[in-house]
Image 1: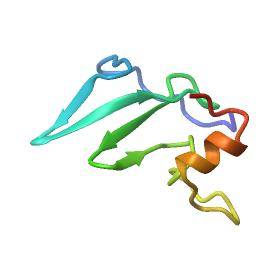
Image 2 (image 1 turned 30 degrees about the vertical axis):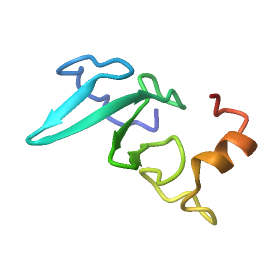
Image 3 (image 1 turned 45 degrees about the vertical axis):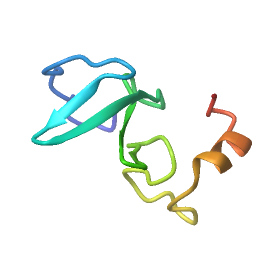
Length: 81
């Protein structure tokens, strides 16, 4: 897509609830499929790193650069849970 170089294959495969250990930090995997296959978020101590999902996405989303899980659950038809 957009003449971009494809991503390399994954080093490891993870599932919902797995912990990715980075030094002394453990990030919990949350399956959050979006517009790309294998979408996931990483949870740590009340923070969620979401990539393309919502809240604090990995890119600026125009007039709404941040959100809340509560708002997305109520107003975003793509968020289930």
